[in-house]
Structures are given as structure tokens and as C-alpha cells.
Length: 327
Image: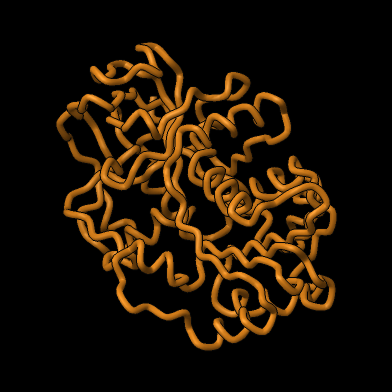
């Protein structure tokens, strides 16, 4: 079968190539999915560039990407929650990475039936961004009338997080560029801050939750705008001590400046590393079918245009998700 593979770290056009590979053989807990669409995310770009090789080392060649939608064509002996012919979507586990391919074997616990009211392309764009937003905001305990600052509201994670927070009854503030202000308002954000003309730190005060999707100084600045006893949840900032331990990093300490800011506000800092979860995808399925959340697609590329899709991803200008139509 045909698959897009990482053959070395480096520039996108030099590092990705189409190869013929063996069709996966499923284990007892797996389903074999004929892929209809796959989506790519910032983590995929980082992997290609080699930025994550110390954290997520992979052999060459390896098929790339994590998000997919498709049809179950085979199931393992221990799988009871899916049948051949089911239409599904998934963010595959790390050890099963490689969704830009004609077939993928996936642990059934990471799979959900796809929402029935959207296309395969729309479904493929949901898993990683949706799980990241859901798991981050649920860790923060988001509830009705909470105020939450969500950075980068036009991105894949941000656009989902806005809608998810609104489905919980929260008051949402978000940052975006001038060109995206009206579009982000349509997602339901209560206050859209144009970072090109406004300083969010002069507008946001004492929010319950800051969802940091940008990192660097934004992680530190979160403690200027979060309330006493609030929560700062980051998907790009430094690891917290519990997360470091889960990655096998002994004797890790939170960076001194970040630890001081957290202590001064008595506000919790937590790094979230999304984990595949079919049950969470089922929750997202219900939200999509109830029309509380809509998938946001920037561009759909053909299978043969997969490298161009990565180039678009690397530009950082996507508004919503970049999807590759496999079949």
C-alpha cells in the first residue's frame, strides 16, 4: 500500500517521500481502518523538522501523522465495540503513528464512531485538536460562568476550545489577528482581542482559566491575568513536575520564574500532553451531532499533494485544519 513517510529529519520537501509499504497486521485489540481522510497538526511539522527527536524518537522510514477517519475493514478477536463496515475516526496512539496511508491498524480503545452529520474530511480534522482542548479544559474543571482566556482562537486547537468552552457555559476571551476577528466571533467567543491593535493584558483580568497555546512569554504572562487560585493550562510551555515524571525525567523542577509566578498567585500550572481516548471522541461526536461544535477546515489536499499540505502547515497561516483526502 502507499504511505507518506519521514525518511530523515530536516526540510519538509527533502524529508517526506511516498513509499510502498506492507499492509498492517492487526493485533487482538486492534481494528484495521481503510483511511478516507487524514489531518496534520503542528506536532507533525515538529516531528519532521526533528524538533521532538529527544522526546519522541522514531525510526526511519516511518509513516507520518496521527488523525484519521475511515471505515473498519477488519477487527481483532478481542474487539467487541466495533464491526466491519463501521465509519470511525481516531487520534492513533504514538506507537501506531502513520495515518497518511491507505490502511492503519489502531487500538480500538482510541477509536470512536464518527459523527454522522459531517464528512470524512471534517471528521479527520477533529481528533487531536478536539482531544487536546477537551482534556485541557476538563483538567481545569471548566464549568458554567467560568471565564477563560484562550490564545490563538483561529488555530485548530483554539477554534475547537472556544466552542467547547461555550458548550460548557463559560465566558470566553480569545486572541487572534485582525483578519480573523469576525470569523472567530462567529465561533461564539464573547470577547475577541485583536493582538495587532490591542494588548490583551490591558483587557483580561482575573480569569478563572488561561489556556496557553503559544508558550514562551505567554506562559509567564498568563499569571498576570489569571485570578488568585486560578489555573494556567499549557500545551506548549515547560513541563510541570508530574508531567516530567511521566516522561521519565527524574529530579525535574519547574523553571524558577514560572514556579515563583505560580506560587505568588497560588494558581496551578499544568502542562497537558494529549492522550488518545475513544470515549472522549465519543463525547465530541455527541457535541458535533447536537451542533454545539462545528469542525473548521482550512484546506483539503489530495493524497498526492500531501507534501504541499505540510508546506502549508509550516507557513502557520492555516485557519482551521489542514486535511488530506486519502480515498
